[in-house]
Image 1 (cartoon, rainbow, N blue to C red):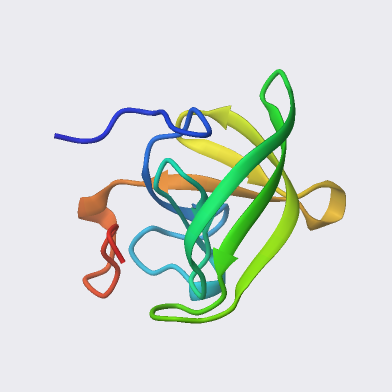
Image 2: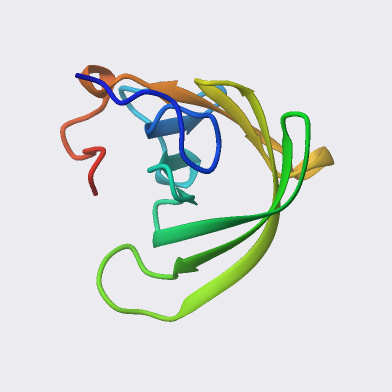
Length: 117
């Protein structure tokens, strides 16, 4: 069964791609994965988001991630703005740097990308 929305944000856990990309063939830079604790990019893991403030569906967070795709590495911290549009869509960043990400069902992902990576 598929996990229900929840965790730090009311998002469905799984893989998200930047708007304008397809789930079948996403660019690495356009991938994000939500595991209920944080939102990792393709080159980070073990991310943990701490909510600093929340106004409706807009969150200001401090997120800490290990700055490598896998294995040991330095932990970095970044303040970000996340807007949860709905359980399957969120905005990362603000203004001109903002990117919208859409949820991808597991069966639509390429073989090289598994939700547990």
